[in-house]
Image 1: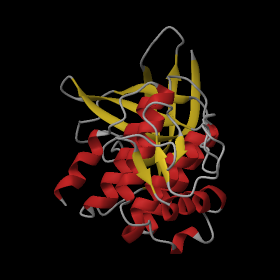
Image 2: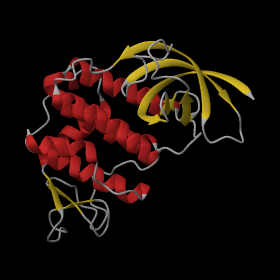
Image 3: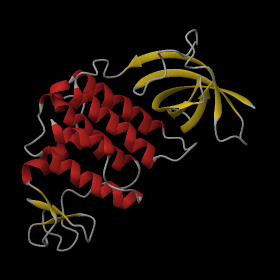
Length: 246
C-alpha cells in the first residue's frame, strides 16, 4: 500500500450505503481515480462540504494496486469553480467538461497537461460568465489536440483546396471544403473556422474579449462528433441537454 498526495478535481460523487460516498477524481498525477470517502455524509465528517463536483482539492488517499476503489484519508480545498450555481449556462458547460473527461480518460492514466487545461478552462468560465461557451469550445479544441487528434482547419483532405466555408464530413470524419461536402454534413463557416484558429493559437490574451460567433452550438456539435469518432464514444453529452430549455 502507498499513501498518495496529489491535486484532484471531483468529477462525480455517488452515495454509498448510509454514510459514505464513492468519488470519481481527475488527479494531476494519476489521471482518473475512484476513491471511497468513508463516513462522508456524517454530520461531523472531515469531508463534509468538500466533496462536490467542480471542487479543486489537495487529496491524500491510500493506494493498493489490487483494489479498484482506493481509500480517501484527507482533503483540503484549493478552489471551488462556479460557486454561483444559479448561473445555469456556466454551470452546464463546466459540468459538461467533467462529463467529457470521464469518457475520454482511462483509469490511472497520467494526464497532467489535460489536468492543467481543465483548470484553465474552468477558470476562464468562472471569470467570463457571459462568454462561457467560448471556454467550453476552447477545452474541446485543445483536449483534442493534446490527446493526439489535432484538427485540420486549413486544407481539404479530399481535394487539397483551402477551406474557407467548411463542412464536417460524417463519412471522412474531417473538415472538408464546400466543393466536397455532401448532404447532412455540419457546416462550419469562415467566421467559425477563423475563431477556432484564434482559440488554437492564443487563449490567455486576446480570446477573453472575443465572443463565440453566431451558432456556437454548431461548432460544439462539430467538435463533439469529431471527438466521438476518434475516441469511440457517443458524441452527445447529457450535461448539455439543459441548454435546450434556456
